[in-house]
Image 1: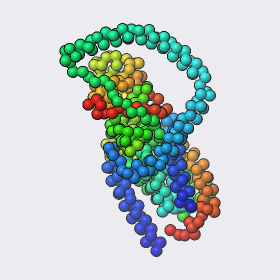
Image 2 (image 1 turned 30 degrees about the vertical axis):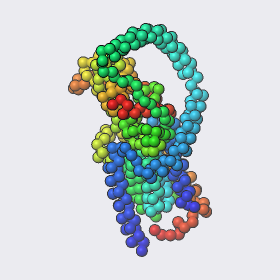
Image 3 (image 1 turned 135 degrees about the vertical axis):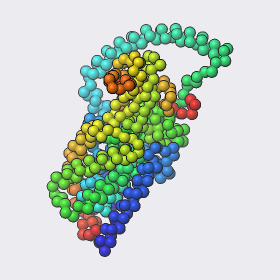
Image 4 (image 1 turned 30 degrees about the horizontal axis):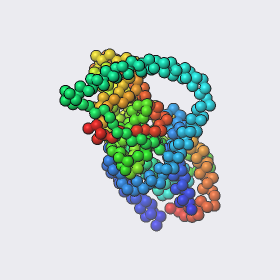
Amino acid sequence: MRFYIVLSIIIVNFILQSTIFQYFRILGVLPNTALLIVIVFSILWGEKKGAVIGFITGLLQDILVGSFVGINALIYMLIAYNIGNFQKILFKDTYLTPVFFAIISTSIYHVSYYSVMYMTNNPVEFLIVFKNIVLPETIYNGIVSVVIYRWIYNLTRKSYMKEKIRGSKC
Amino acid sequence: MGKVFKKGMRMIVTIVTIILIIMIGISAGGRTRVSTSENMVSKVTLPVQKFFYRSGKSVNEFAESLFAFKRIEKENKKLQKQIEELNTRCIEESLTRDELDELRSLYKILNYQKFNNEYKYIAASVVAKNPGNWFNIFTIDAGEKEGVLKDSTVMNGQGLIGKVFEVGNHWSKAISIIDNKSSVSSEVLRNNQYMGIVRGSINSEITGLIDPEAEVLVGDKLITSGLSNYAKGILIGEIKEVIKKEDELLKTIVVKPAVDFKKLDKVFIIMPNEYK
């Protein structure tokens, strides 16, 4: 049950992100809701599930609309895995946690994207990227992460989402 | 037990990372064929995306029309003026056309090699766009089965949009000319001696370099020259700015694209083998 709900969240988010959200770009930049969903799940559920969710989300994006297959899957998976390692020591009842991780991981996402672009012979000027993409997107992601965190946090509290996560230690 | 499991997890993540890096390397240049699993995934999601893209467009248009009275009125006046201008021009053009037809009939007599200017089009519509902010990539709903090939030119009624870089069964991905990765060989419409290359950039602006001797003006129209993968004679845009720097050999031009990339819907795809 939990699996299907998470999968449908990922797919619905992807569809909305690639279609309707495109018409509501602010300054030409779109908040990366897929990344935020991955972060939130790995904050709440730890590195194992986080990494799997990140991998699926990224691969879906890469196959259907990406330019290099695997790049989003790679970055999402690594970000989710590393954030998930902190899961046990994180304080989860404050909105500061998602905002903090959203800002950090958006920056990491863009730095890794930049390095892949650099390695595949598509060099771009980092200053322009920073000014036009990274800075606005980080701010948007920080704001949007509060909404997504709140929604998913409440969702994970529901009985049908709880099946066998909380008790087990791994 | 927990420790062993944790180590195993780390191993899995490492292995998957390596596999993904290899996949990135393989798919970096765009592929002529995609795998069957990708086709299967897109078969399911494409119709849904199509529906949502359409509905997003209509919602956006509705919201915009509420605020756009003034602009529409202004535009209306401008367009009416343009129609008058074009009407007078139309008569002149038809006269020259008759003359041209007469001259063309001489081709046969002189046995002159004729440039085939007729392309075969496939109509398609945009179904989704790349959600990331790095690329300007979109998916269209025509693919290999419809006859699309890699590097086909994509355009719409307004002008050049981009080219196809990955082809699936009933879908393909196209990269637009404002993307950082693409560059187009272009020429000035007013005087086709002035050739140059224009490139997209990361902040979706088209800039290009042109011969310093060339007399290009702000407002000149740029068309494709046919030397690159793109078909010849498609409008790219208007020159917005001409920059001449002391320490550079060539002039820099900034181009305003003719197509509104925010509202892509119907596109044409030109087959590359038609003009070879």
